[in-house]
Image (tube, rainbow, N blue to C red; front, side):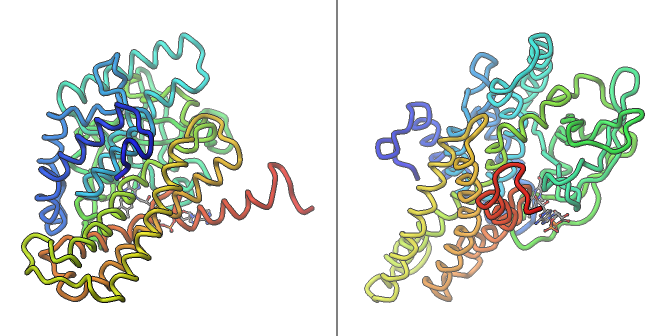
Length: 410
Ligand SMILES: Cc1cc2nc3c(=O)[nH]c(=O)nc-3n(C[C@H](O)[C@H](O)[C@H](O)COP(=O)(O)OP(=O)(O)OC[C@H]3O[C@@H](n4cnc5c(N)ncnc54)[C@H](O)[C@@H]3O)c2cc1C
């Protein structure tokens, strides 16, 4: 998707994206229709991703992983999304448990003793991933303003001897019933504190079979059906101190100082945007496997449509590449505005490109025997992903563009 020479990728980026492309074509693409049809979790893909070292892509080299940083991961995940959106999106939930605890924490402030303890704890999680193929989910959403970053999470953790007791409910928990650990964001309850605070957010790994964990509700959505994003309920679930994926206060610091961390939902949709374009070109050339070799490329309307799709795709890729390139701690205001603009652009344009591909390729192209109609349904989900939904990006850009920090109209 991003030519190594043209985009000046590092050697590691060139190698990992090439691996992901090969893996996507050989393994993900042939299976994608099944997860979609059954709304079932791509367990076979995860087994193969473990064998390929992809589960540990963001675990630091020194700790046995492939040592990918933020941009390298995003570029690799976009290649995965090109071949199976649901696998790429759920892989993001898993990878965040290693990216946020790994490369990202190195950019944040921590006293030396707490950093040392954090490194000891994350090793336990990393070892499970690398050795056993453990998969981590990322259930944040609760149906209120918490996942949008507005208020403290309603799921709570109470300190008890040796660990925490967690209670609450999460909605749309991708990988529910299939992940080995749920990386839950919750608010630590403190004695004497009048109101729960976002500063007290904890990020805790809860084993799937811990007492008090239940998966509830059905799953029959429009798109991204292989994510199996059901509801999770925690009733006084006990976890030990070592369940902490981040030390207290670090998630809040990350969310405020390293905001590009919320862009990791976009690569899956960047890949879908590319896939919609790729399909259209092949189909109009009469080259899509399994379809009659009927060419449609000679009609001027098709040429105009493809040209417009190409323009939109180039705009999307260029802005997204710039935003993931400048991700880092303490971004400038312009960089943050660009990150929101990029997130909005990818999510909205993926859906627009897929819709245009359906219109341009025509009736036979939207049969379920071809991937386009799945791309169309999967693409529609991108704008809904909190905390940076397409709507919230627009809200934030508008406000930040017109007000400096602390400014009011009083
Ligand atoms: C395929 C798929 C997979 C998903 N996987 C996961 C996952 O693994 N983990 C996870 O945590 N979530 C996941 N989600 C959930 C997703 O991130 C959103 O939380 C979910 O779509 C919100 O649905 P809603 O109907 O509650 O949204 P909305 O009602 O649109 O918004 C949710 C809440 O955010 C607040 N809000 C909305 N707009 C604003 C605004 N302008 N300003 C301030 N607050 C606002 C409101 O309080 C609102 O109730 C997934 C969603 C999909 C579609």
